Length: 307
Image (cartoon, rainbow, N blue to C red; front, side, top):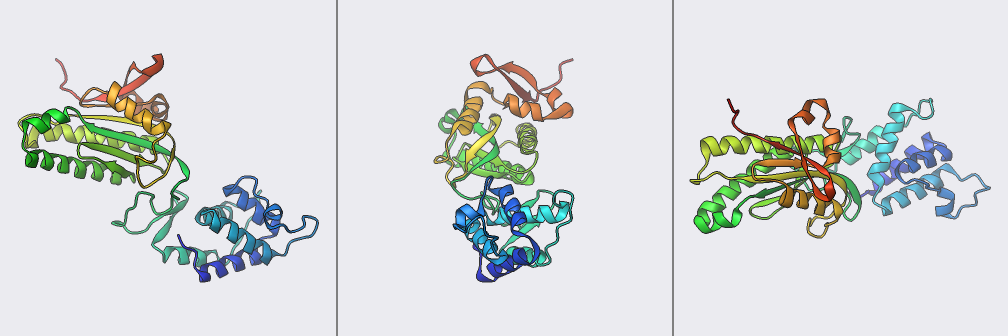
């Protein structure tokens, strides 16, 4: 987001009126570990820095590094929870939050961060992630099994209609759990989840897609044959870029491998790290199966009960 002149002035006033320089630096280090205001500003460490100067230097540094929102989130955390057992007050902080919210964001106390305010205003970065930086994501990969055969057997209009239905359905379930469809290429795509319990949300989303597609094939399909999907969930660090292709890394390659090589049609596969996060209610629904490098993966599927 762009830090306007009024917001800059409020920020400098809030910090200089409310926090000593030492506490300013401590809060800054919650966002940028090892942050040293004296080293960055060139101000002599042996001389106490004026509060207003310190606030202006912090504003400049965090604005340049695209971390201003994270700094405000850290300040909200400190004023809410205190610092080293002591209460911290910032009387201008509500006005700073209001200025940020005027730019289309809102502070979520549940997530401890700013998110997009509008129900229908959704961007890939949730309005807060900075392009080019690395974040921890849970990735859900979706792909139509036997797509090339469907293209050969049916008309372009029939296949396009089914794929459009699929994309709408996937997007609905992904955004219901506050994920984002990162990329989509006709017969499948990639969704990302970022917030708290992201691995659980990605897994539940995959399970819901399996369920909905099961009912679609049973009651509402428009082709003579069922539509089958392969789904996989894996979590790890990933560079955030608008183009998923350009963001390719180990985490993305891993989830693609799990989906394409270790997931039968109609199933959802999760990696061991994701499975560990599922807890006692979800984990019994997944069966262990052989994975790459003599490892173990975990698979979820639906089927008719055998009598």
